[in-house]
Structures are given as C-alpha cells and as structure tokens.
Length: 69
Image (cartoon, rainbow, N blue to C red):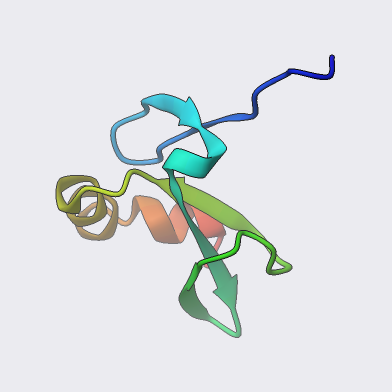
C-alpha cells in the first residue's frame, strides 16, 4: 500500500486522474475558493485544469451541488 496513487474524479467530465493533476475547490463561508496547496479544511471538489471543465461545472451548477452550497 506504500505506492498507492490517490485518484480523484473531475466533477465536470467524470475523468479519473491523480490528485495532483486536478484543481481542488473548497466551500468557505458560502464562497468557492481555489485550494492551491490542497490543505484547506472543508468540503472539496476536484476539477480538471482546463477551462472547458470549469465552464461545465459552473454553468450546470455541478460545483455548487458537489460542495453542497
């Protein structure tokens, strides 16, 4: 289990990637914040780094649903 790679799923395109390849978004005080170091407390959601996935996540409210806002 030492070399187990952490995988997460993009909420927009549902692609499974390694944790460090995705951007983590966190809900704090009803605001959505980009978690640069992936260390902030709170509910998080992962998105691919391309603009298409970010656009899909915001337009379809997938980001708000994933963060339970």
